[in-house]
Amino acid sequence: MYVAVKGGEAAIRNAHKLLADRRRGDRDVAPIQLDQIVEQMSLAVDRVMAEGSLYDPELAALAIKQARGDLIEAIFLVRAYRTTLPRFGYTKALETAQMQIERRISATFKDLPGGQLLGPTFDYTHRLLDPELAEDAPIEAPDQREEPEVFTPRVTDILGHDGMIEEDGELPEGAVAGDLTREPLTFPLERDLRLQALARGDEGFLLGLAYSTQRGYARSHPFVGEIRIGEVEIELDVAELDFPLTLGTIRVTECQMVNQFKGSAKQPPQFTRGYGLVFGQSERKAMSMSLCDRALRARELGEDITATAQDEEFVISHSDNVQSTGFVEHLKLPHYVDFQAELDLIRRMRAEHEHNRLAGVETKEAAE
Amino acid sequence: MIKEDTQSTKTGSGPDLQRKAAMALLAQATAPEIAAFWAGWGDKPEVETLRGPETGLVMLRGRIGGAGAPFNLGEATVTRATVRLGNGAVGHAYALGRHREKVRLAAVFDALWQQPECREAVEEVVLAPIADRLERNRTLKHAETAATKVDFFTMVRGDD
Image (tube, rainbow over all chains, first blue to last red; front, side):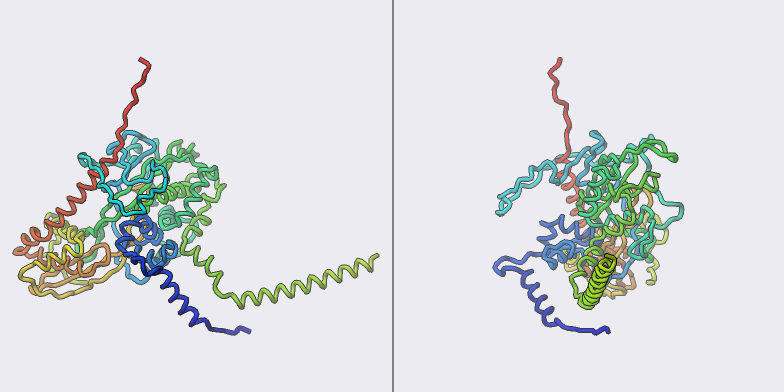
């Protein structure tokens, strides 16, 4: 018999009131403002935009504030919000070659057009806590240098000419980019859908998998061909106008991973590539994404599939932290009836077990 | 769908590019900036809102490998509005973000820009300051990034 019960309304109401109070914390401390989060917690904002799969810094900041800094909860809030809005269309593909660059480095070529631009990086810091930041010490304005603005080609375009490296990935003629927010995923996937899933995938999960490829599981000898961070223009075709409209600019991080490939029956030895593109300034995520992208191309490149990072269904099915947290965390919700049923089952099994044991003893005795 | 005013260009040539550039600047105006331009605008026309301002999403696309086949990267919030002035001129605006009043005013200025008698004023009073600000930001960012450029040099070898 199934008996529906309800209860806990007052408890839930009071729990949420308590949550609001604890979120605010000590009233003698000034409440944090959204512009402070956008400006001073900008990489947290970027992560929420990337994994929430929605570019809107103020919304991400609100989500972070509401989630008390729990970024996965914030990502969940952003994902829920997006379902309330209509879709106006698909933009034109953004042109990372035209990016206004804020950082651009290559680990494969020292001298390249446009140079190595370190930008605002944690690299080469000593990772020592800075007590001065605890105070409100004034910050010096950054240095400036006069340099002509030159076109900064992607490293892979420079390498591409002599066939030493494979070309940008193409889909079959006439293929339209898949959209996992519109159609449920069915495996196997094409690379476009994998990249969409990876771009919104959990940074920690992808980082761990990327690391596993370096430790020998699906080893692929990677080099960072290029990482670039900066702003790109977004253009949209709309029905009411005959030209694409510029909607503004967004910041993205792009990673071109270059990997050794010994060749196959189909292809000569050459460098292959993994690709990462992520909202905001998010180098670790873009690098992890490109390593996972490359590992997941095993089938396409005719490589043996031996490691977890190459297992498309495993990686993509578990990379979304909203799905993961939903299923893991649902376990804490009341399962009283399910558990009661299991309890009954265990009792019956134990009784049977005991019965069989005694029966066994009797037969054994009888045999003796 | 909203009928485009007859003076809107359908040729895909020069005038289109000019309006595209104007609308790109309006999309990148800040909300306070464009509100100030509107507050300072003499002889305000009657404005009727035909659509919005309404906020929705666009799916942003990247390209595999940077320049290969497109893939869907993730969404962004976009706000759009369409207005009609007292004289019948229609203006559109689309911009990233959720600033409804900003986008409504951008549509008003788009409609005004299409009036030959207003275009110069819109360009001087509204578009030029936005373009100046964007250019100043761009130059500053470029110079700040350029200061972090690595200058490699060869260590002097002591073997000669």
